[in-house]
Image 1 (cartoon, helix red, strand yellow):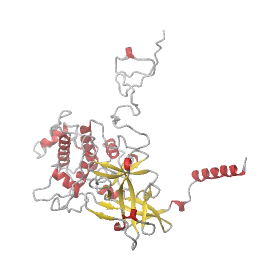
Image 2 (cartoon, rainbow, N blue to C red):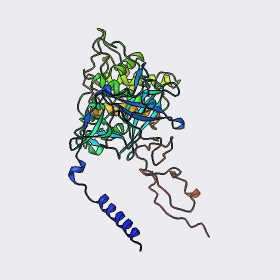
Image 3 (tube, rainbow, N blue to C red):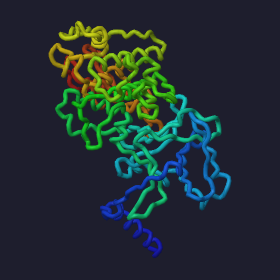
Length: 462
């Protein structure tokens, strides 16, 4: 064997050892440092047939100007860096070698891919998970730019652009850094495996919490809890309702409205929830109080939750070109404590609409309409509304994520509770009485079928 070949093999062997051996603790000790907002911009750059790509540009203070901004909704970026040799004036990253996602101080560059994708009448910066096909909406342009124009991506609350730091040295790589607690508080979503939640194991709504988190319209907290018994506030409800509506495939939501003035006397236009509250106001999903206030931080009652979800479902129906009124899917419930309540009719209607309104803790006949709505029931009730609107086929994280490695096709069904966990497309659910039509082979039996038929092979070659 030639020496050069031996050296190559040795290099491969040493590389394998390096990849499979634990890294020294110091190598993992990366931190980050914020970048002044006026010095850096995330840009949606036209990319031909691809659509748009992400470029991040940082201005070096005191040097030649790298970019200029004009207009709003969207803000157009003048890419000055393309007109001169920007080496000593601008720092630029155009792909995953130069930027990555960081959540709660950990570099998640190997977990997420950043894409700029069209959504309604705007572009969104989305972090797509390689592992579980979930997505995080990191920012948006609030409008679609004219063809060929560069647009500024406004980062959502809880996200900021930072630089990676190692042993006190600022590196060239950018981080899109997210604080999951701040994102959740602002109504954004951080998909988390439900198994990480330390406080829902015995919750009656555990399964529905898991599904709601997977869809992305509600999230857990930084300390790996869900806090199921905490009360939901009015602004959190608006954010959750808007997020749930975004998972209904047949409903195309326009970009959130601008908020030049206060939607309500106690909701400043700069508040994190202002745009969603304005949207809810304009579409009669959530209303304010007679005194002109909204009371964004006030806990929502169970009755108010149900009324908002009814309004949301009606809005979705009209967007689909259907009558607004909701069709019952089951018999209404007769609650013992709602007859004289202001929301009595709403509660009865939603009890017949996929069981959105159900007894307190799913026991007895009391609804407890004036009790604050806990996060666990709010997640369950919103999920039931979403399932009634989608027929059990949610658009969100359960369906295709464009470009993911498994190439799941849009339209694959989210299997209902009680169906086999691993049924593949094309497999047949054998019905009682179908024995005379069985072909040679093993039968994939549907869980819970009444005849309890066992798998068997039929010899047809007599």
